[in-house]
Amino acid sequence: MILRSLLIALLLIMPPAAAQVSDRDQALIAAAGRGDTAAARQLLKQGASLLARDGDGRTALVAAAYGNHVETARLLLEAGASPNVRDTIGRTAFMVAAVRGHTELLRLTLKHGADPHTLNQYGGTALIPAAHYGHVEVVRELLKTPVNINHINRFGWTALIEAVILGDGGSRHTEIVRLLLAHGADAGIADRDGITPLAHARQRGYRDIATLLERAGAR
Image (cartoon, rainbow, N blue to C red; front, side, top):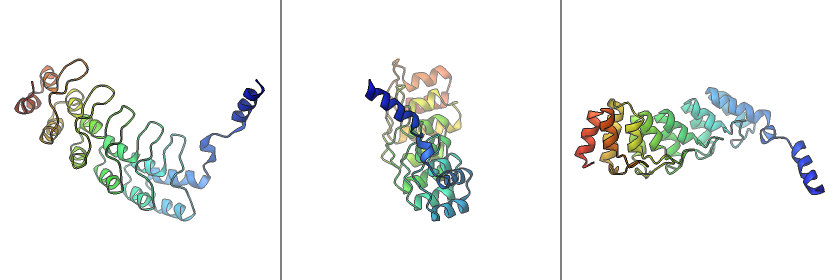
């Protein structure tokens, strides 16, 4: 009982992790978030940490990624920032780029060692949300990596399924379906209810996508 009371007291007087971050570190994260490369460079010279995080768990690099500030991200990566550090919701700079369609930033993170096998908070690879949101060029870039094209996330969906059921059936999602099939996506993988990508496409009236799937041998 005494030990428990001491532990509680200790927890109450310990500052939160964010409070351990210096003003200089917070200034670096803020500068990265607004894309102020000159300020970020100066703060790095003054000793600001690339590992520091804000209240949302964002490092300076992740903050730069959310704003698509490529030059600031380049500075941070060349200074040694890791593209594989996650924020509190589980997104790395690489994942942010994929989700938001920031193609140049995605290439930059891959160049500096981003892990294409990284999973997001839904247990999906970067390819899955990129397909979902219709980011054609991001999908092209990801298909150049060893990412698992048939990976299934926690919802039971592959990138191909998401391109169909969460897409709009328009030209962007049709092109993504074409790209995925051309790179070996398995059109026979159904969702948890046993509904295939082709069945989803037909249900939604996505004729062009259905045609692509039929030509790939889907049923």
